[in-house]
Length: 183
Image (cartoon, rainbow, N blue to C red):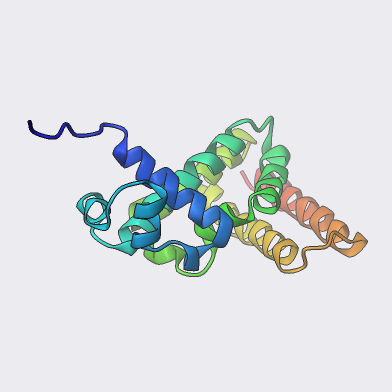
């Protein structure tokens, strides 16, 4: 009797890779390890993902879905910025996958533009002319990224870290207010 394909297998493989990433980062994600975690074979994993990099690209897309869902709950621009910091701090492995070493190789140019467009949308909703929104989105994202990386590299919360985060949020709002005035 012929074997029946398991419709859950692709999901199980990605879930296994995600579990390995979350527990050990990039070094923990090997095709052989994913196969073992997913209770399948290495060739089966390769039948879904051409190589390890393709698997990491799929993992990044999964992490970005979680990040986007977290940001989608934002009430306003300031909340979007605060949620960015919160996600990066509370989900360090996802944030590493999203914007850590090798991230630009794992996301195509269209997806990179889409990620910027998400911030420009928040900025336009906050009252900035669409022609200026991307100009504000880049520095806002880079400031937020800097704070998240500071937090991740200095794991112990500190008054200085909280002051840096507060200053970053204030700077994001200052950029927004300045751009609103330049209509």
